[in-house]
Image (cartoon, rainbow, N blue to C red):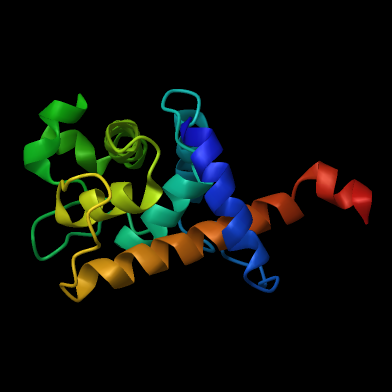
Length: 174
């Protein structure tokens, strides 16, 4: 069900924008963590039913692909997981500094939220950013959350398009 809703939303998003330049879109350019981030986002898709492109879009917005990022609220790492949530996500707070573990914990939270909100990506992003809410409630107009949702969706659209353009199937059609 999540894939169906995600697919419908992706179709609308992909048709709405022109083809972006893909250089550097799938992560940082020359960071020592590039390989680990790429590997973790791909492998976690086999554990939790969340597309790797969606995870990368959240990482892009949350930390700008900086594994050592810390928010003013205290969220840490690539996916900006709050240390008090670590144990509920199956890791210790100190493990959140490891990129692969941070991605695993953040993706688990996304998977739980996607299931809770029955595949509603917007509600999932609002809850990831601003905390839980009732399904289909309006996006809070608190300044940050609407821009957060727009930004992640735009990044997700770009991630998907660039992954497609780089895939073997897309090069065969050209």
